[in-house]
Length: 242
Image (cartoon, rainbow, N blue to C red; front, top):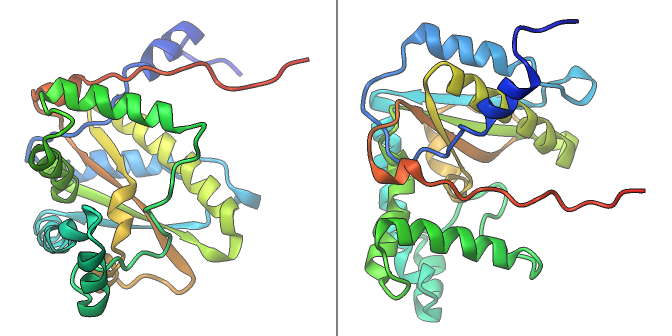
């Protein structure tokens, strides 16, 4: 089988993908979105089951969901700062309490912590946010729940019956979706933090039984904000060879 793209062209192309964190408000045309989703369905999956379900919000639905996510985020801020009383209060009142299907606040394995810190330091440095600037960091983190201004958000659910293999298959699908979006001129940002609260999405969409919310992908046309130039690079893949 032959293809019109060379190995070198493919390598160059995939290196242009970025996580977009500031979008224009312009809507994605329906035919463009359908073309991207049409590409994504060709991802490999466990016995071709495609064990995932997408809830797609655009226009007013995106705005409504963002408003609800911002409310929950703002309620959770004191608990996020580590106050034991604030954490207790959150669980007693339910205000800002996570409604996740999968826990999103996980301790990073020690071996991975340096990579996380490096990326975070470089991103906030680009934005001029100092390490001790809690207010600035909170404001930037809050942008996640505005979906960075994206007009369309895809909420990804995986079937619990296939456990980690459904999550693996969803990952294959998401990567093809994001690369297809890129070639169609559409930016994307995968946002695991959104899955801290499954409640707003479940209230808005009739999600089939057995599916659990695992991540979201914000989509739209990138604007000229400096944050969209952020490129953390990549280290070599950890591996053993014989």
